[in-house]
View 1 (spheres, rainbow, N blue to C red):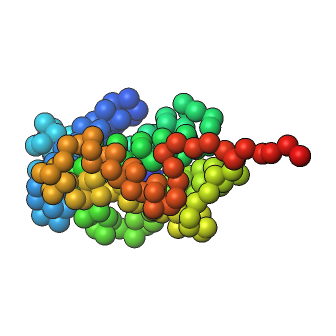
View 2: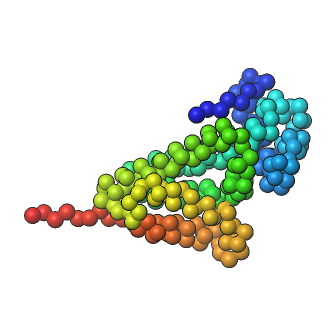
View 3: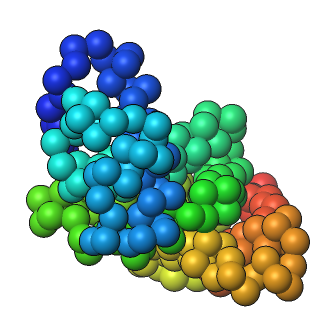
Amino acid sequence: MKRPITSQIQNEVLIADRRERIVRAAITVFRSSGFHKATTKDIALKADMTQSNLYNYINSKQDVLFLVCEHLVKLYQTAVDESLAKSEDSHTRLVEALRAIISVMSAHRGEVQLLYNETHALEKSDRKIILTSIAKLIKGFQTLIKSYEADGGSCLIKNHRISANFLSFVPAMVALRSWDLTVHAGQEEIESSILSFTLSGLGIPLKFSAPIELVQ
């Protein structure tokens, strides 16, 4: 599903550059003031733009919130896609996709917190688009689990959709509980612990060897 945002500018490269700047500024402003209290003037100032120039690239504050949410979901998907391109082994692909999600959520904790706090503020149609994108990510994990089991692996939870939701949601802990976790552990330990916990909860080992078929 596409959500077109009209622009007064025709240069696509310039639009992409300015919207990236707007997104970065909006993340800071929304985290500081909350979506409802923040203004486009605040965002423009943070982006080092005039308010009138800001409106050359977006039409409303809702546009900005949508761009922020879209930005984060794209980060998830890109990280997973890049991890999958590195291996054809089904177990490795599953583990590395999970590791990629954890890494992105760790590196972009502020954006993750913002997404969970402000998604409700999206207009219904925009929220549907973002949730559809997240559902696509979940389906990707579902497919990885099916491939892993087809190659001889086993998952404790037989409903693949439930398992896929665990794999794509539990990593959010690295961001949503960072206020406590980072006080008591280093980032590497946090990420590896979440990886191990999530996999072990589903009965999926970090290292896997397919069952040996005995020749009769």
